[in-house]
Image 1 (tube, helix red, strand yellow):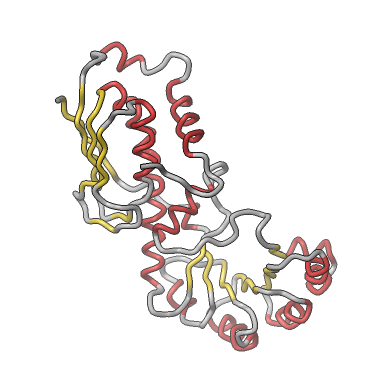
Image 2 (image 1 turned 135 degrees about the vertical axis):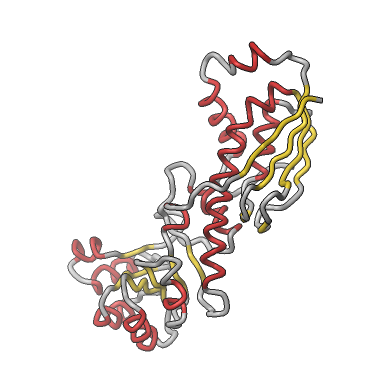
Length: 281
């Protein structure tokens, strides 16, 4: 079963990751210690309650070194599982499985960590009507994967990059001269999605009048957010951003904002505790 995402080359990612680990000398430990025909069976399992992401990539790593490996995924990406849950079983050549082990585990641990933290935020705003968004605060080269992991945790992707929407922030406004000028230029350029960051109530009316299609309400506390949402009155989506954590997100969501964006989802998620135990066949 392949792992396919838009704008992501799974085969190239697997090759580059394994090449980084193998270097020019290959896995000298396995070559010296493990007979070429030795076979292993293994089980990947969760050590903590987690939301799973990246099992398809783990399978791709193992198959890259042993195309005939027998691999069975026991849960699906996006599933929330209890400690001790078996995620994946595999059998194959011992050298290949051991060589691919760390790359496979690192990837699943990282992506499942993001999915697990994301699910906590999604659960914290359940029933409010607000939608959780991720951000562009991702590791270079891993954006597509990390944003995939937030989706597995229940979030919605914000901009994938600089290309899919204009986001006019304070530095853009400083150069343009005003919010109105910056937005008007984006409109004139034919940009369809124009997100405008505002941190004061008096910036809302000019941004809307100039053609903003989405307002990012930056670093506003709940009272100011309620005032902003009332002023916007549903004309465009509203997004709360800044100072959001698990202790504050519920109160922010209850102000009536459409979206809440959280950089922590990809910036601060700890790796999930996932193990892989092998036995000789």
